[in-house]
Image (cartoon, rainbow, N blue to C red):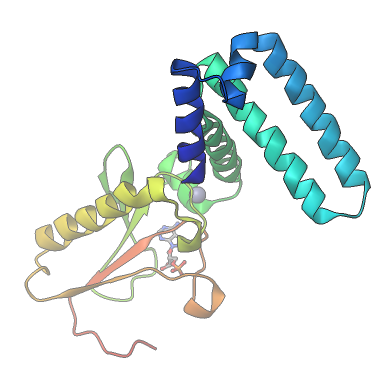
Length: 211
Ligand code: AMP
Ligand code: ZN
């Protein structure tokens, strides 16, 4: 990513100050000089944003951004720390929106259900309205409304869902015969509970294409 490259150069110019480097000159003046520059760049963003030239706004924002990265280096931080903070805030906001989620209530044991498997991240329960002799729902404990909300950090969790489903399919004797794993996303697919879940269906021949 370009931010990594820029940050690498900033660190290098701090480590090995060179006379013709802007970053070296700024950082050798100390933190107050960097802070002053950030204040100036922020003012430039405001001025540009009051005008009509979008390109100028981009230019000033890039300057501000760059000087914030110089300050990060001064503070012993990097853009990854800031990106992680933003990601955590965003995820927390999404995860907090669990009010009225039937599966979250089952996970917290507020609502009773036929739980057949549970570990740190995953839970499996008998579907209340089974569509096959074996119909189990494998759900992550993390509240993710639809498969569209999955992020890189969920990759391992998705693997765990499939592994739990395989384990249950094997224990229930359908692994060799065959079983189906389905995740419905949004109304046309028939999603009715907006907390992702893998349907594990087995114990009868399955038709294709599905209805
Ligand atoms: P979907 O339509 O793909 O969102 O699947 C939701 C599934 O959750 C359906 O098969 C429902 O029968 C099932 N379901 C809804 N409420 C419960 C519950 N309290 N306990 C077990 N299964 C449930
Ligand atoms: Zn939920």
